[in-house]
Length: 116
Image 1 (cartoon, rainbow, N blue to C red):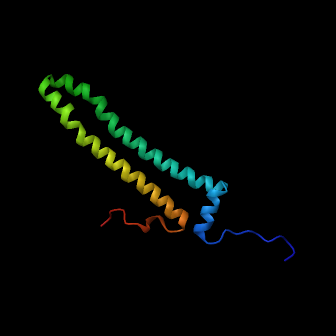
Image 2 (cartoon, rainbow, N blue to C red; image 1 turned 90 degrees about the vertical axis):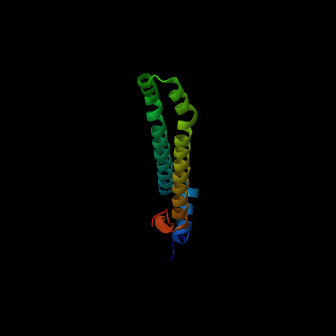
Image 3 (tube, one colour; image 1 turned 180 degrees about the vertical axis):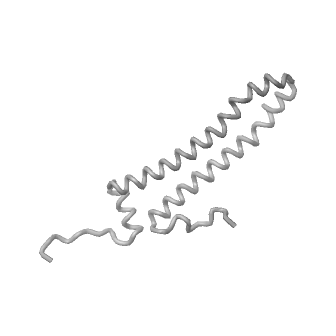
């Protein structure tokens, strides 16, 4: 009772928020975890885009049919690009929602992520 009173941030959610705000080692670990998951999603989206784009010249070289090449470039690529973008945005939002749940002190699986 003779020592200085300790400052406890309170419940788990406030404690996590405090760790992040004060840039403690644990708070930095939380932020690094979010950044790693966002980077992983970005690299995955990039690879899903880069591999087919790199293979297109080989496909066109083997095909040697100009009208089909123009159809693939004009119409075939866009649904694929939209699908990658849609997946990336959903993944990034899920990562941020899970991080926000962690900060608030709720379990990361508190939201239904489309599971049946």
